[in-house]
Length: 580
Image 1 (spheres, rainbow, N blue to C red):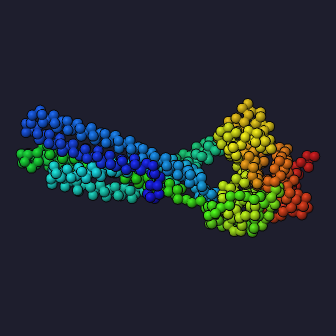
Image 2: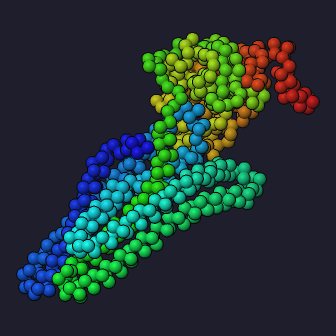
Image 3: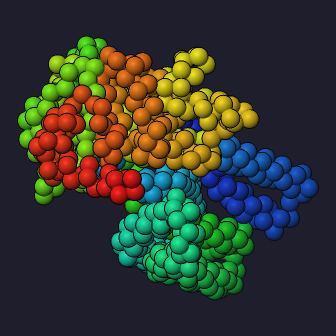
């Protein structure tokens, strides 16, 4: 885990190395100052002149200034290194997620990925900041102060050796108890964020059904669950502070009482006032170092679980990889399914597709129809290699899709999915997702084919109209038509419309199909639909049932001898016939 996280330090290595060096110099200065003060106290006791006082004063000011300088520089380099690590981690995670196949994405909740890129990265950032600064400063100060305490106080310094094991055992128990709690709480964080995300995405439905109270109760329950686990963990961590205070005051009482007794009983021979003042200072230094170490341990304990979650994302390798010598050209839009079976995960109990054998000629218009759950969408997702077939071979242009360069294949297979997504930005910016070099004329032509130009031209800003996130300020039908236009700008060899005209009226649907047939005759067109009207004029219609092909034929052929198609057609046209 540490090795994987360390790869993201990269250009911030210098700052990461400079911080411990500067911290070490700061600690050296701080630890020498009490020694010099002890010498000054003894010099004053012996009746030194003003010249000696001035020399000691200048030396102390110089050392304090150097300590301040080293500390300030360490703080600056530490901030640069920790913030840089966080930046690189988020960047690396985001880039890693972009390479995921749908199968990889299915392993993680969206809310979990958001939590990992925000809360978890912040935890690691704070822990790293503590590791390169406080985790260096505290042990060094502890060692230096311990050595100087022995130099100044002799056998009195042994008290610290009894305190350290007590604190070590206490910290060990705290870490042992809190680690499982943090592991649980981060999973609950994911669920909490998932609840928020779901509520915001479906806020119109929530308000339509007046379910705000229910959603609030659901959120409160999730928040309370997170709070309960955090409270339990914090209660255990809270033991840290009183334990440290107990050890601090125990040492102070011992040093003050035994030190005072030694000075009085030996009249300053065994221990003088200067040594005693230095010993007290070193005592505070050691115990404050232990306090800092306990804070570091607590943060590292929390960040350890966050680090594992980050590494899970960074280590996840896409299940879809380019071959060693990929093919960078798609000959045509022909498609072949050769005895293809498919399931979404290795552990799935049943196949989504079973023994599909299908051959589509380049330029054909193919309709796919079937009931909900008949795996229509699963079938077309194998064409652009969003998933790989579990068994059998899928070919595009007569070549196995696994032999193509992924980017090349997907640029020639344009898919307008069921869930149409528009991004925040202008209509032009959204259209240029299909082709970033598209001219205004090409965009207008694509929109005319998709019957989108007719409503775009009515907007005051036309193609510069701003689209809200998710296309919230356009209707479902308008959103679908913009997504079709975006796909057309790719000028693909294969165009797949996955129920992409469900929100438009039948007249507009017919106009879109006519435009596609006339303007891109060489492009293979696959239309998945719920309405038979959307596929009636297709060259062939595929009827899907239970993950298999039930029948293939023209509208007339299927109406003559396929019960499933007849039933769908009759149920959709029954109301119209009765009205007539």
